[in-house]
Image (cartoon, rainbow, N blue to C red; front, side, top):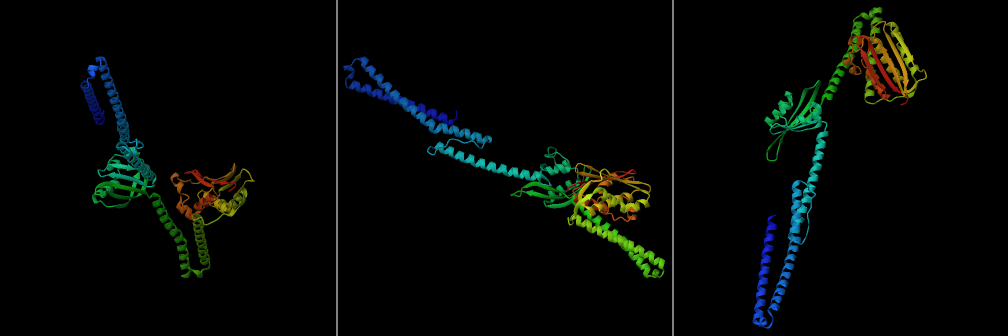
Amino acid sequence: MNKFHSRLLVAIIILIIIVFLCMGFMLGQFISSLITNGALHETPVEQTVQQVWIALFVCLAIALIIILSLIVRITTTYTKPIDAATKAVNELAKGDYRARTYEDYVSTAGLLGQSINIVARNIEEMTKSYEMQHDRLHTLIENMGSGLLFIDSKGYINISNRSINEIFKIEQKDLLGLLYYEAFAHKEIVSLVEEIFMTERKLRRQIHLSVGNEQKDFEVYGAPIIGANVEWKGVVLVFHDISELKRLEQMRKDFVANVSHELRTPITSIKGFAETLLDGAMNEREVLQEFLTIILNESDRLQVLIQDLLNLSKMENKGFSLNLSRVNVKELLENSLRVLKSKAVEKDIQLELSVSDETIEIDGDLDRLKQVFINVVNNSLSYSPNGAKVSVEASALDDIIHIEISDTGIGIEENEIPRIFERFYRVDKARSRNSGGTGLGLAIVKHIIEAHEGTVQVSSKVGEGTTFTIRLKKNI
């Protein structure tokens, strides 16, 4: 029983005492009146007593009715609203902000309930807004492409997102609550955090890290978090994975270096032989003819290289279109092999063609596809020793055409297979350069096949040979 109920009970008891005192006083007055008027001498005793009891019961009944009315009134007006308000406040304290209480615009208790309901509605709206903002922030942090870490003022990790877990192969539960120098063994990260703690300045730094069996490059942005009252909150770190950018930058550098080398070689030859002729060698007809032939060949090589570069640039920038037509696969392969027949005879290489169905046709650009198969077969011939064998097999499976070009050449190391379609990449640099290749053939092959919505795959074993598998759709 609360204090209010205790006070109410005391008030009711006092009220009952007052009522009975009043009744006693009234009864005394009544008896005095009877004595004064001589009623007791004129009526029997029994009649007098009966009248006294009747008066007493009437007064008692009136008192009870008044008391019950007061109790009902007080309970209705104060007790029930206050009980309802108490329950509502208890529910609010437990976190149930949907709890409401009785409202009455007349009584004080009702006004109290109204105020409690207003507070409850405000808290519920604020809670919903907070939860919405929290969900948005959590979703943003979890799904951002960069890794994020928050380290508090004591050095403990409080927040980490999904990207951090993926980058460092660490479960979130194993990361939160750890000191930063316990969570990361990388000295670069530890020194970066310590520098921010000491200097309280923003930092941006590129670091190279070993993560498992991988080597990755990151651009890390770190900043101190300072509150409104210059209160030190901690450090936030954002990791941007720039490994792919670094790889592309290295490819660009390699490309520029390779192009410079490939262009310099024929230009050096042309310049050298031209200078020799100008120094007097042109007077000898045999030397003149030999040197001019070399200059012509080097010029042709230079022209092929420049043309391949232009074609590859157009393909990579989607600057070329296919002239589609119905192409007979057998005729396409026969025409491609016919171009390379003399090279195969020269190296005593057996060149075989097998087509499961002579009527197989596909939608494709005849000239581009011919360029593909000439490049692939020529690659097989270049990397096969004298007396080897190169076979071309074509078959149809549902709506897909499978074409395999296999050789019994030197093969390719497994770690080099993913790179053979890169520009200027050579498995055997000396041999390919002596064969007159530009190093762009397979890169062009890949772009043409992908433009036809097809795929090209390579399997190889060192010393046994290599197989190129090309898959093309019958209808594009």
